[in-house]
Image (cartoon, rainbow, N blue to C red; front, side):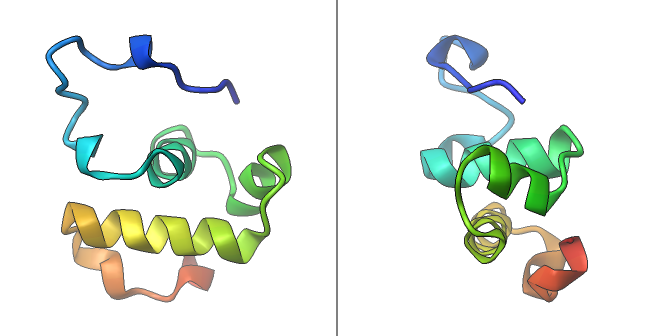
Length: 77
């Protein structure tokens, strides 16, 4: 996985609606939901605990208004 930079997003601020996420939420969401990286793998790569990554994903889903936002985080592992 590569680190995101400002150049990864359009200059007009449009990045598929992810602007409302914090940097940590956006990194976790992009890695797990879009790039298919596993929660535990992403946690290891970013030196976070899997529960922390799960919480970031939950908050990202809630902010994005996704239907599965209230699912158990363990279902995403």
